[in-house]
Image (cartoon, rainbow, N blue to C red; front, side):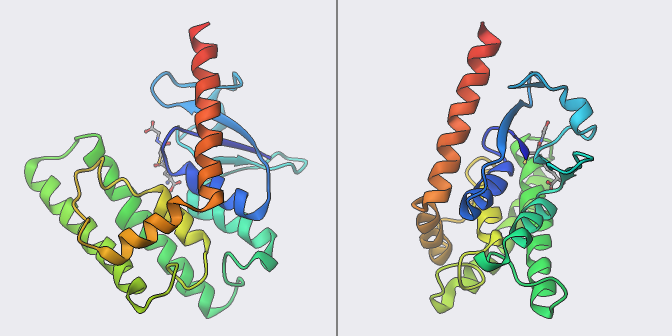
Length: 212
Ligand SMILES: N[C@@H](CCC(=O)N[C@@H](CS)C(=O)NCC(=O)O)C(=O)O
């Protein structure tokens, strides 16, 4: 498999999930500014919508999956014994998908216009308040002392961690103590540390190639 990633973005969620499952997709870095890839692939052809993550499968058609939710769920479903996601077709899975959709729409995509400074002052305040409410809902989940968002570690933890862009979007959530303690646990997790190391390595290789 090939996994297209970008520096410090939601593609880290896929890297973390792959690491948790012991999968080793070939990593390809997409430079969102220069629009180049670390292996020379034309990213406009890889994903005409021009965003990561993209997972290219090893099947005959070399299908390419996009959308973070879909990719992390697909990978977790390949290794059900790892328990990173509830079984498809169950109510538990529906509730889990509800959580993933919430993360994508109420957290990940809310940060992006703030980080890119695309909003009016009113819109900035409104969106930051939405984000604080969304993070507060995650904090409340953790209030019963569970270590991760749905109990044991799941793909939802990987997704939230990979999109904790509150500092970059100017969203103050330091008061959410359960969430901050969860983040510290996630920061120390080997799959997360490996994702950061692998990302730094491929970004450096790509930069060196561009400079040559
Ligand atoms: N709907 C997509 C959106 C993915 C997305 O927003 N990707 C960002 C990084 S987190 C990206 O690649 N942006 C490229 C750009 O801004 O040029 C998903 O949920 O996976």
